[in-house]
Image (cartoon, rainbow, N blue to C red; front, side):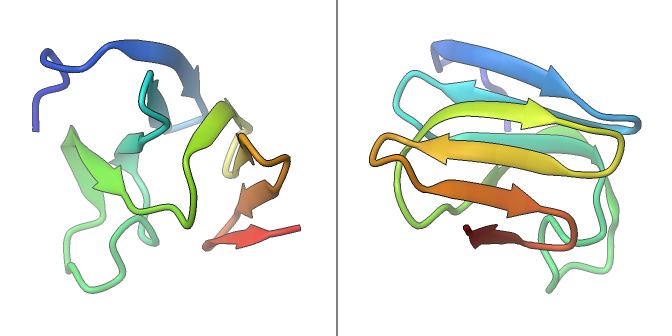
Length: 86
């Protein structure tokens, strides 16, 4: 999926993955991530893949092997193997 039709609010990078946050609060991921889409056998994605979130996201950050997302309502979502509310 090309992100050329989206306005990107922010980009964050980990050791071997990248997160993109759109102006609409959607999150896309590419790179290595065995837990991005658990039903897929492929673990490396060259093209950004949409990651369904429980609510629109305001900001993102990446670490070496984790991601953090902050929603507009103030909920924090942390991804190590999965995103979850904190």
